[in-house]
Structure formats: C-alpha cells, structure tokens
Length: 283
Image (tube, rainbow, N blue to C red; front, side, top):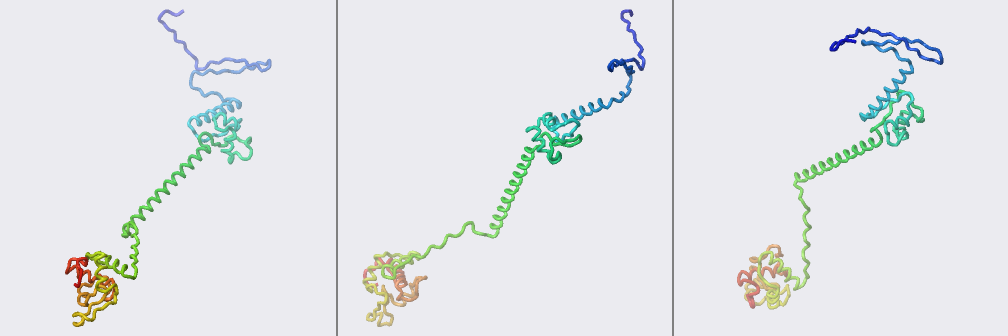
C-alpha cells in the first residue's frame, strides 16, 4: 500500500498484447488484440463492416441534407422509394417521390440504383407551382407597368401636340322660322337681340300693319319722298338712304327683304325715338 499523500506513477508500455478467443462452432480462434495508447491508425475493417459504415454515413448524409432542406438525395444500397419517402417525410409518399423523379428513375419505380440522384424535400411540384405563379405575377406586373408607361407617353404626346382636352360640342342648328309675318318678326327680334337693338313683337307688329298691312313688297309712290325719287318701301316703309344708313350686318342688302327691312327700321327708330315701341304714327 502506498503512503498517504503519495501517488504511484505507473509506466505503460506502448503496446499491450493479449489473446481473445472467438468461438466459431466449437473451434476457438486466437486473435491478437492490440491496444494502442499512441495515435496509431485502426486496422482495415472487414468488407461487411465497411459496407455498413458506408450505408450509415450515406444515410446520415441524407438526413443532414434533409435538415438543411437540400433538394438532392443520393441513393445507397438497400434504398427503396418508400424508404426514402418515409425517412425524408415526403408529402404523398413514394408515389409523389416517383412522380417528381420519373425522368431519372424510368418506367419502373422499383429499379433504383446506388448513386442515383433524386429530388426530395422542398423541390417538389408545389415549389414549381409557386415559382411559376410568382413568375406569372411578375410578368403581369411588368405588363401593367408597360401599359401605364405607354398610356403616359400617349397622353404626353397628345398634350404636346396641343390636342383639345375634349371635343367641341356640335354647333346648335339655327332656329327655323316660318316664311310669314310671324316668322319675319321673330327672326328680326333675334337679330336685334344680337346687336342690342330694343323692340318688342307687339311694337313691331303694330307699326307694320299701319305702314304696309303686312305686305313686304309695299311701296309709296305718291308722298313727298316719292316725289323726290326715294319712295318708302317694304313692311315698315323705309326709304333707301335710311335703309343704307341703318342696315344691320348679317341681313340682306335688299330693302324689300322682310327681315332686313324690319331690323333697319327698328335700328332707325331706336336712334330717333328710343325704340320702335315708341312709334305710333309717321316717323
């Protein structure tokens, strides 16, 4: 027994050898066992052990790929589509996995071989559909932006060319007047309104009846004006010098024209009497 407080240091040899008996149906095989205390390489493993290690490593690699959401898996010996789908939690099972990889697997889902690259995980059709949908949405957005750009360019071009903002309203059709005393008076009143000449329907009608009886071709050949060679003419019996002096633009230059005669006479009466309405006799 060592003394208290003292520790004995054992020397170890670099190699410790021993014998292990392995029973193989009654026969004992003596195999050397080498225990290394230094960094020596492990002996070569039997083929069966190496295969198991390879399979385990590949499976571990597949699981690691799944955890990292990788879309690729390399088939190892002993794999089936059902097994791969189960280990990688493929939605839809082996049928979905086969459908996603039919081009590389071929026509028989049972014939897969080590080293075959399969697509698993998120790289499924739903991802393809999402990508396609996103692409279509992007295309639509670009198309909409292009249309908006074309519309803006068109609007700018039209504005630069000085195009009117809105089409002008069609011109109103001229009022239709009857070719009689009533129509002549109403048309004359419209012309007088445009030129600010006062007068009323009744005032005009009253003076026409007294002067010509409503005959636009009436002429006075017996008074002093007629003796002077300038007889009174038309509905309101206007002499030529007065007609010419008070002729209203836009009407006929013929003093016998009913509308021209009325408007010229009313223009004269407005100048001399304030309005045709104020005339009750010869003027």
